[in-house]
Length: 135
Length: 194
Figure 1 (cartoon, one colour):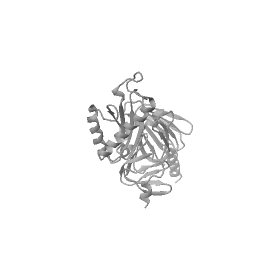
Figure 2 (tube, rainbow over the protein chains, first blue to last red):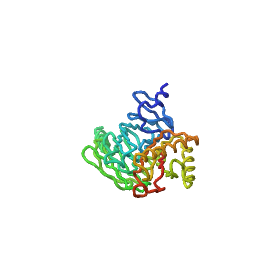
Figure 3 (tube, each protein chain N blue to C red):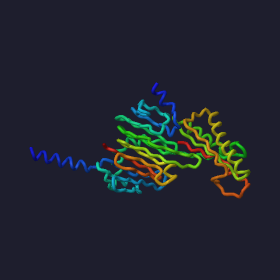
């Protein structure tokens, strides 16, 4: 029942899970369930990878995110307007490791693509970065 | 006993200043220059070269540094293995209306093969026209071209996770022309797959 609820995106999807290795959980409106490839993602979603697990996902502007083991990524905010190719996104890496590659949003405006960590804010411009957070 | 206690305190103090967060700019395979600005509690560090890094301590103080490829692999090897493939763009040309041009058949087959090989895919199909006809008609025609591509893909049995069709009409001409000038290179659909 929970899996069905998570697969039918009630809000506009902002992206999609592209790969899952091991155990990856999605938390949406206080409910958590395992993630499968193809799951549509919504703003507010939290992805958690367990030990030995990884997850790859893309967002609608073709930005790419990969989580290493024991990591938590929050998809805080995302807007994308395909006609004009503009938007903004903000995600948070709460713990663990991530590799992030920019897409259309970073190209569309200064400070348009942001990634937060517990202690810093990153602004990305047309690039690929690796981020690690130790609690 | 007291000496051991002093040693513990010193280790804790140095532990407070060890990096808690690390940001590394990775080599960019797209060939574009890239950068990231990391803003901590009071300062910012901007990274513009591959393997240049920013480290933040427990208090949010950020300092610049560099890392080796070995360090990158040790910290990020698992995540690097999970990065989805980069976006690919296909450009398909049309005869007048919504019929695919002969020269685009091979690219069409390559697109279909790529979509069949991916378990979950997102696609944006953007239609364009040349400057023959009114701007409003071309907006409609370009969207119709984009939607025709979707219909063709569905007929091929391709499962599409997320699809967006957009018609941009006479905007973003590949080849600049006078108004009402026929230009087959502008009659196209650009398909992004990621």
